Image 1: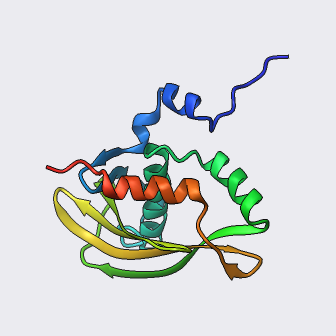
Image 2 (image 1 turned 90 degrees about the horizontal axis):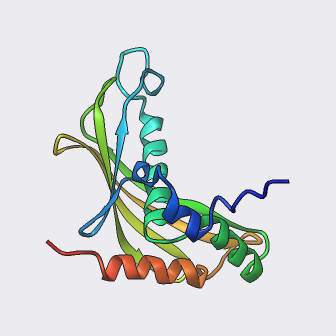
Length: 169
């Protein structure tokens, strides 16, 4: 039988020929390009508001991937530290400033603001050609058995390093 490598191992991520699809790290955070497809729009031809949340979620996931957080390993560690855990969006403050349309190429910018005991706060902006379309602040909390818990050390260390060591320029 052919053994498949763990698709979420650090070695596999480094060898991933499609890692470029995860966007790029930039001074202060991460940028993910997103093309708007027909399925992203509503009957009027503009991006349906809930789809911006999907774009932002993808950007948060790919930001983690590029700073070296292997989500499969993180989940394993989290299960050991806090059985029954979940990452939940605790709050979002969004401002919809301008619409995006089919075929637009957007950039989702993600920057860590704060890594606290049980939560991480991020600033996110969806932009088109330098123009801000949507901006928001997202707080993600770590919970287990219905209560807030300390964020697993692996994620805490990676997020703090990304926040502290972001290239300047």
